[in-house]
Length: 335
Length: 291
Image (cartoon, rainbow over all chains, first blue to last red; front, side):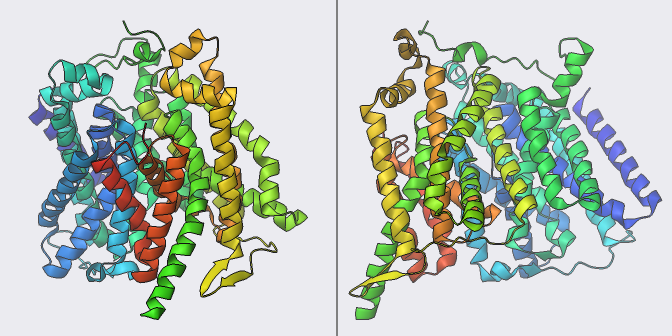
């Protein structure tokens, strides 16, 4: 399928979901749906670096909060419309992602993962001590009652998040099928071999961190308007970090479908669990699912589906995911 | 001027005391991450688990937290060995440790933390022990006993670990497995068994570190998160897998954190270790005493 057509289909599906939510006529669906869509964007963004390149980012919360706080800072400066903020926040987070990658990506993968953890704490410390955006007390953002043709502001936010999700998924799909995506896959499968055959690995990794960081920041951009009162602990909540890792891994990391399925399933499940049980229990569920899936079904739900259908993964998944690393890791003499 | 000098000395002393405790917290990670290359980011969660066990025993039986933690070390060892077995079969053998192994430990971290939250709630818990209250005053230097006792036991722990690693067969085999697993196999040693033992020891140290933690400060389930970055900062800064390096780095970070919180306010202290970590990663990834 051509990408513009795919984008159009996504738009239509998104529009249909939006229309269905309007038809249901209950604001709760917008509030809950917004969170699920936000996770679609976060997990798709995470997957561009984590799933395609194989570099684990534990700092999703940091990028998300960066986006949210950039919005607060910009709002204090001059309240731009949200789409403009989205772009500004994307630039900020993308630059931070690039810098972060530049510092750590020349090292082994684990260092990058640890550094992303560190980034979250450094940023949180900075925000807590930065009075302009509210410091540790948090910041209030008063959202308008309604805007333009929308009956309610939350509908507007929902629509923005929907568009962002559509854009993120399309971007992920385009990357996956381009030269860039194949480059990413070589890094994931065997970085040394890729480097040796002339793949510019550092440049590709930097592109991936930049895109991924920018998308995560954009996911956080409308958040202050959604929540109304932004606190460092809610913006930097580890929930975002664990969810944006768990969702792609549970869905399947090798294609854009995985994070989408993971985010919709897990996101809705959590919305349900939060309402019916408690928010602590829903984190436990996420943790257990994550551990269970990585042990039992390493290729996620997509992998399970393929196993069930008893056929080789074809262009539905884009590329065949082979455990190419496995033979190399068996201890043995160098060939 | 005298006043600030006074403050400076006190900040340095308490930094050193805390630093030795950080070394005990990091010792386990130095073994697992530094030597075995297992990125166990759930280590702090196990430390909190240790704290809670010390807390339960101390409240119900009145036993000293440090003695309790030494008694439950075998259980932690078994837990560690079990986790390694799962990790080996599911990830290391399939060559998937980089992405899914990391996610596995991240999941463990969450499960441990949330289970503790569900069972104990998010209230701060603390223990009673005769050495928690009193403080020694030497000149104008204050040495709180609740920092001194963990500091001394930590130093003992590091010394014992270092002796085990350099003097015993198992210890040398652990060092060897990091260098060349295949060579170890040729010498008729099962590298998986050695790694299992090493990971067991690494988790066993978490029990002791947990007892120290609850002696030093009241504990609630998410306290462990503050230690994730700190622990890895110390491990990387010290040079992967070098215990003396770990001790030096821990003391350094302890002192700098203490100075920062004394002179700039405690809200800036968490950034210190992370600043060090980013600096170390960017400038000298091999660490202070790296191999």
